[in-house]
Image (cartoon, rainbow, N blue to C red; front, side, top):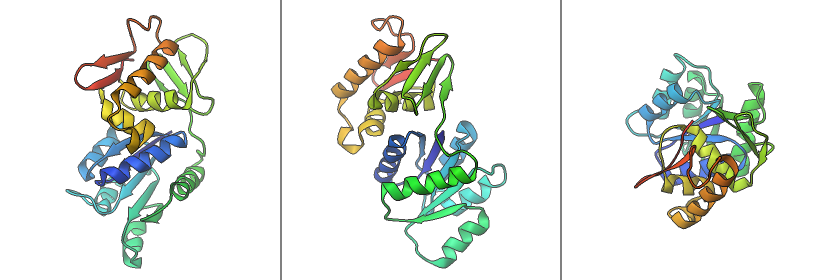
Length: 223
């Protein structure tokens, strides 16, 4: 299942995304209101985590525009504890509120509760082109081939690439998504992980067909 995290605090957004990926979800990040609306339209997420205080369009404005075309569950994040702000968000169509700071366990519990309420409790398979990833069983299938078991790190790498098929993802974004802030910028570690995943999904790992290197940027998954 896919979750959109919209927050201009890139450090916090990265930590939230990391916790969600640890929980088996695919994550798309947006740094401001307009980007969040565009991502909702393009990515069709199963749930939206929306920060109240964002530039260009704040969370309330995004929510009002979102509810004109979508009933996707929305969890609002705020540093504001005022009852008026909570009431305003709920009146606009928010499904739940979470005040900062919060623990990753609390966030995941709220997310799962909202998904249960919507009839989808567990993350399902992610598919693009001939590649199908099942985060629950930690396995991948390419075309008509057999299921191949993946490690947790390989699942996180493939989740991130499947979230934006045929589009390059920077090495820094991939590292942060897989290892959190401590892994950001470690290109050699990422290179080794890419090599291991290629051995499992590529007909010829020495001449990658799916997981390709984009020089000067990072990697992309061709589907």
